Amino acid sequence: MMLKRKIMGAYSKTLLEDKLTVAKLVKLVKKSAKGSIEDEEDLDTYYRKFWIVTADLVEADVINKKQHDKYFWKGLPRELRYAISDRLEARNPNFESDQVPEVEKTIEADRFVLRKALARGGWG
Image 1 (cartoon, rainbow, N blue to C red):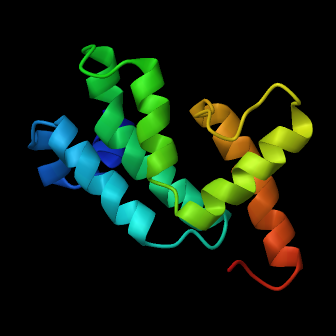
Image 2 (cartoon, rainbow, N blue to C red; image 1 turned 135 degrees about the horizontal axis):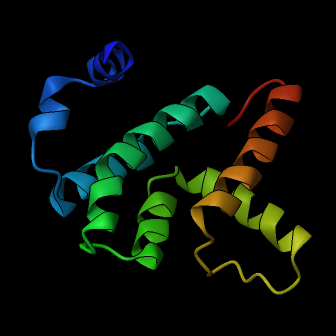
């Protein structure tokens, strides 16, 4: 019980008690897309917030897997999406830049892009 309380305490009461909706997901995605993701910590923060909002929506079939992937993708800043697309195209000749990659593939490519940018002195 103690562990459960600690985990529950890690998330704000409002977030857990509010009914999560597509409107809240869209708000998160728009806010994130306008912001910046400079490093893996920023990426993890975005993913954690995204996961909190989408987990129940996916489970309740409010959004499907493809929509889930698209919302995640749209929440990344534009320049980062371009760099991730380039990375995915370089690794997979069948990948087209207008495709929306699965969240897992996006995160993997994103980590690579961010590490490479950090080694060069920063992103953007």
